[in-house]
Amino acid sequence: MIDVRNQVGRLIEVVFETPTTSSEWRELAKQLRSIHSQSTERYMYCANMAKAKLFQPEEVILLKRIMEVDNSRLLRSAMYLGSNSAVLLLQMERLIREAASPARKTFRDPQKLISWMSEVATSDEEQRVREIYSNLQEHKTAESL
Image 1 (spheres, rainbow, N blue to C red):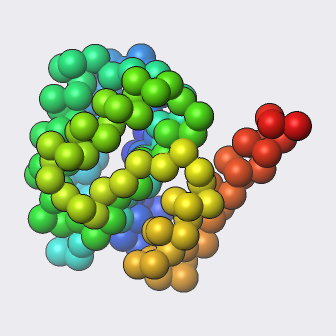
Image 2: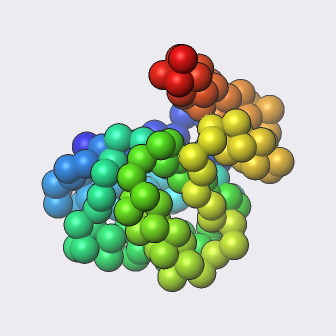
């Protein structure tokens, strides 16, 4: 499952849950083109991959292409991996290196993601990031008890 939204300002929210389908990847690319066509501003991405385990090689290629195309329009991009598999972490960190943008980071701690995105977010964008990722922090804390 891939869900993409642009509810507030420059913030693009993407949720990934594996397995995914090729039609979902085509729809993601289509939705991102549509969002980008509405403004010339640079965008911020928050990708929640907490329910993704591992992307197939063809999916990694598609994600890398999307990232490379987005580099010129990118303000910041945060990938939340939660306590997911170490393999996914390695896969996403390699992808970030290959996409060649220092404006991209992976996070396992939602509070660090919130802090990093807040540095460049408007107050509405920051509030939305907090809405999404503060709940994950509460859930993570409850799981550890």
